[in-house]
Length: 187
Image (tube, rainbow, N blue to C red; front, side, top):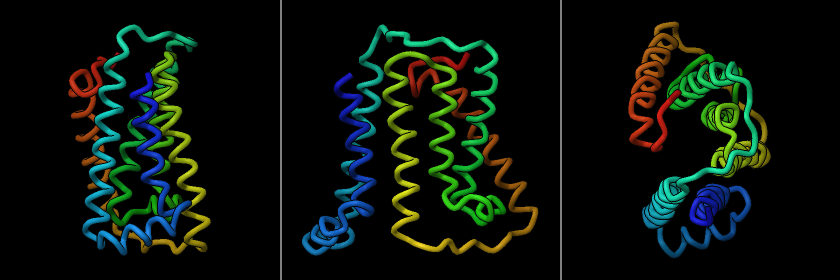
């Protein structure tokens, strides 16, 4: 469990540096240059992901803390699909950006909440609870740092259809690969 927790903390801290440690970021940029800073940032995140994955997989017998009704699994899967739509929409012009300032971070929070609906074990609480808290904290800190929200232009309907199609393909691919990626079958 320690490796999983360390990975989530590293992920969160690296992402939070621009919001809570601007002097540190500026110091690193001055010493390493922009490419060096981005490289260090990337290496730390890769390390965090590896710690999360290996930490998750090292817990063979998860301890169950709660069990929710079966229907929450269906709601959870629907919410995961919504999260994937938000992930994809974050990288493209879309109407979603007229409603949500941070679709990707909102998607992470929804993805985390959905997984907490479907999994009541301790490692899930640590992973998805930690990622959900990080995403919500990141939204608050970015909003505070960036000030007023400037909304994106509204694209044509073709862009919305493209986002839905890409999201569905990615969702289905992840569902298919989930046993290999997470070591847990989608039930």
